[in-house]
Amino acid sequence: MMNASLDLNAVRDYLLGLQTRITDTLGALDGTSFTTDAWEKLPSDPLRGNGRSQIIEDGAIFERGGVGFSHVKGDRLPPSATAARPELAGRGFEALGVSLVLHPVNPYCPTVHMNVRVFVAVHPTEAPVFWFGGGMDLTPYYGFEDDARHFHTVCRDALDPFGMDLYPRFKTWCDEYFFLKHRNEPRGIGGIFYDDFNALGFEQGFAMMRSVGDAFLSAYQPIVERRHAHPYGERERAFQCYRRGRYVEFNLVFDRGTLFGLQSGGRTESILMSMPPVAHWRYDWKPEPASEEQRLYTDFLVPRAWV
Image (cartoon, rainbow, N blue to C red; front, side):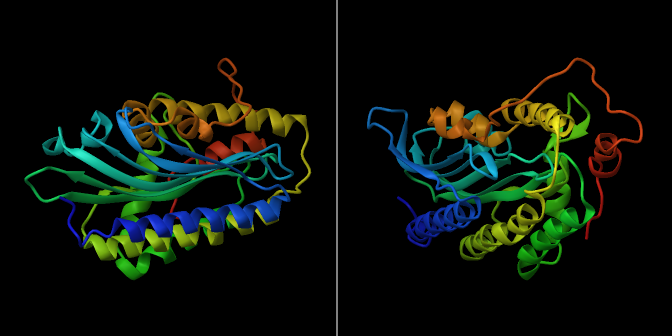
C-alpha cells in the first residue's frame, strides 16, 4: 500500500502545471503553438498509466522540441532502474516526471535538456522506497561564456536553499553523467544532474524538484532571446548537425531515462521525441585550428567552474 505521506497527486498536479507553463512560454516566444498528444496505456500493457506529449516542429526558433509528462506504473522495475539499487529488483513501481529537449534552428542557440521526476518502488508487505531525479544541462554548438555562466548561476541558485553543497555535487555529477565515453568528450557544458536522491525526505525533495523545475525558464529563455536571430551560414549549420550526432549517440547508448522507457515498455514516440530532426556523421572529422568550432572543444567541452 502506498504511504499516505507520499502525496503523488500533488506531484502530478505540479508537473502538469510545469509542462503547461513551459510550452505556453516557449510557444509564445516562437510564435508556434505546441501540439498536444495525450496518451494512455492499455490495461493489457506491461506498463500502465498515461501522459501528455507536447511537440513543436519547424517553428521560427525551435526546429524540434518535446516536453513530455508521464505517470506510469509497472509490476517490475527494469534493469536500468535497479542498477544502483539491486536490492529493489523485483519490486513494482510508480513514476512521474516531466522531461524536455529543445533543438533550436539557429546553430548559435544551444540545445537544452531538463528533467524532473520521482520514482516509488513498491512491495506488498514492505514500506515504499522513493527517490527523486532530474536536472538540466546545456549543449551549445558555438560557445558563449556569458550564456554558460548564466545557466550555471540559475542552477546553483535553485539548489542553494536546500544545501550549499548540492550545486557542486550535482554539477560534478552532471559533468560525469553527460559524457560520451566512446568519444572521450562531454556532450555539452553541463548544468546539474542527480538521481536516486532521497536525502532530504519526501517533502523537501519535492520542494527541491519544484525549485529545479521552476528555474528552467529563467535559465534558458534569456539565452534563446539573445541568440536565436544571430546570423549564420552553411558552415555553422553543418557543424550544428555534426554535433547533434553526438547528442543522438548519448541518448541511445547511455541515457538512463531512454533505457528505462524502452526497457519498461514505454511509449516509443514519447521516449524518442528528444531526437534532433537532422543530424550528421562524418568520418574522423576535425575542426580547423583556431576556428570557432575548435574553440567549442578547447574552451567549453571541458570541465569548468562556471560560477
